[in-house]
Length: 166
Image 1: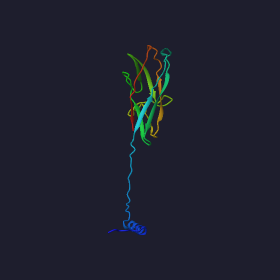
Image 2 (image 1 turned 90 degrees about the vertical axis):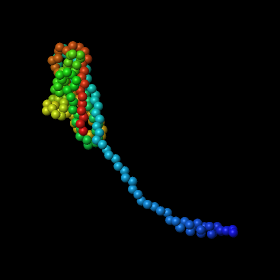
Image 3 (image 1 turned 30 degrees about the vertical axis):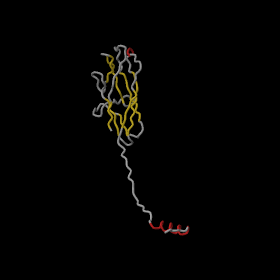
Image 4 (image 1 turned 30 degrees about the horizontal axis):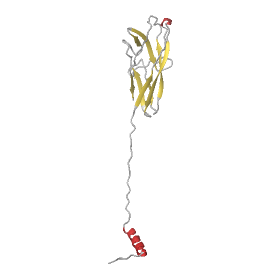
């Protein structure tokens, strides 16, 4: 048996088949989420007093910088310890050159009246602000105490540990 379908018949058959099985569709949703966490980073530019003429017996000022980047809206504070000089305190830090020590102080203000220290110490203050998502720079003010005329020449240094709380 031979089946012959004319072009007209093929067109009709094709049209009927296209109506026979309608296409199916469904709606769906896709959830998208993220959590922005509180983060902070801190870096510093060292305080360098340069060359100090101990025979002059005068105070020498210096500056450094504290650079903090925190998530926008995150409150932060940075405190500082007394440093590594033996016998140093927050109000009288000590740079060392072997057994010799040079007294200096770190401050949070340009008038050098607010000593930079620890949150729990009533004689000191800390740096603080609210994060903006970009680097915030705070100037560290410093002063070598006057009257240290007996210091021998040499390189004096200290390391102060910082703690950022956010």
